[in-house]
Length: 216
Image 1 (tube, rainbow, N blue to C red):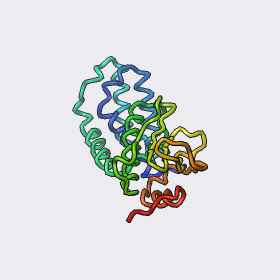
Image 2: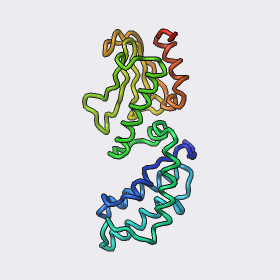
Image 3: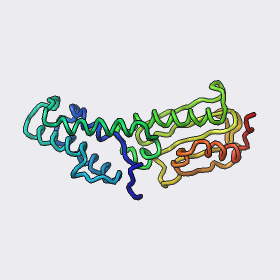
Image 4: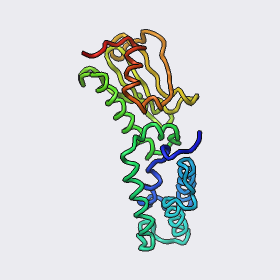
């Protein structure tokens, strides 16, 4: 998948600004490698990326035995650049690029994925003019990094976001059902996560495929 600015994510900048949890060389090295990979996927040069540079400095300081919590004045320009990038990225939808990137069993990524997936499904329900009493958004009973599916259950259909599908491009599933949490009333259809880039269009697809009533 070609790297574009739309695939940039704020995690490496947040981690670079608060690296106190990175206390040994192994975790520092892993965070630095992750940041370099994220920068490349976003189309940025890791050699000049402020998060990569900050995490590289942090690794060197941990290797030298310095405190992971210490703040260094010489990092101020890099910290400001990271804060600016976070502010820019907060206004951009994060669910699609996050799932396309992959969660990598990272607890920080999984936490943000869980929040953004629930928010996207809630917006989908609102677009379909569902009353809050007519739907629920639920995680898998045994939600884990390996099984992070989240579903919207309504009276006559279900939509599931499952970022750990084996085949890319099939991260979203939707199917007509007999009642909320009821048995399927047909074959489940699947599509790519980027369907969530245009929720109004996806809502129209659901109305058609699941034979939903058009709201007045």
